[in-house]
Length: 108
Image 1 (cartoon, one colour):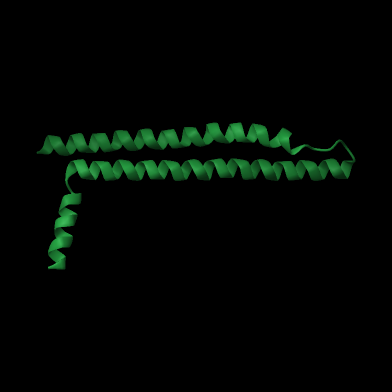
Image 2 (cartoon, rainbow, N blue to C red; image 1 turned 180 degrees about the horizontal axis):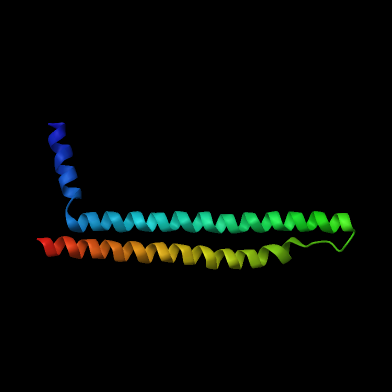
């Protein structure tokens, strides 16, 4: 009895419209995850560069390295870089899903 319910549920997932919605949602989730990872990586790398510059300024006895001078440009760069990566994933995913749905509908 339970296997029949599972089979019906899996059969419903194989319907082209529902499968397309699921695939589009997964592409959207993937884009959000990539956006977060890319943004975080840009911020982490900027923080490391700041720490290196601050240590060198301290050793050389030069002027104090301000974190704001390093992190503000990194935030802007991170926003643009992460958004471009997420947009590329979304464009490829949505067009890929639409192409697959159109191809599946043309077969039937």
